[in-house]
Length: 327
Image (cartoon, rainbow, N blue to C red; front, side, top):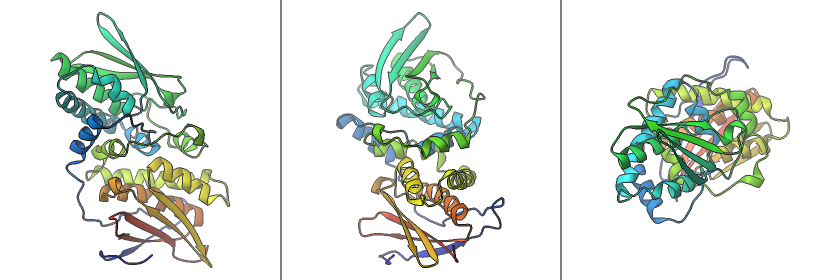
């Protein structure tokens, strides 16, 4: 990989055994773009429908603990309020909003105490989780701003839980839904991530994919989640067929919403090169996602992993993970 205008940084990730794995930390300094939220809202208002395929990585992070669930729900609530305010206080934008962010065609079923929202998503993957926590928060914030009352929303059926639709229930409440129920099983989510879903793939709303990760990108939470993704990458390697590294990398790259992933093998060394898209070339996201690939590489090859990073002429980040010895 050639150097560009920014200096290439390099470090080695230590791994002692298959049970005790090292932790990746790339010492990037660039801050998260503070305008990502505004950019997304403008994009949402001005663009045609743009579907998000729900990258599996963020649902793995959302469901890590009750605290992360509450954090993501709260951020969605804040975003829902902002979107309603920017929409000119119209209730009619909500169905279009849900369709644009990938939840699907929406049907309102009002009653005296509860508003039920049923949506049919474009992508159905059974991972055993109620995945749309931030989306429930967006509905809550949007309806709270519209009605002038505090509205809570919970998802009670989900396309990521084997259901044929996503179902949200909104009701007047001053407290958030209970997030202490079932947490994600990493192994089940990884099975979904590595399965063949090419026939159901849809274009990704990149701004939304990045925006939904923002609650997870602040320290110290990002450090702990890097460990989780490192473990997830190791488990993904263990679920992959020997000799099919490129296929597994392609699937992980797809669900992390990277521009491209390359696998190279030269003599006794193997390398994984990650290329990020312009909108997700921000440092905390790169740190998190590269952790998953580092875990994958160290488990797949059983070697220490050397990490190099650079920026190309289009300001896209590139990360290269290479084995530090024979494979």
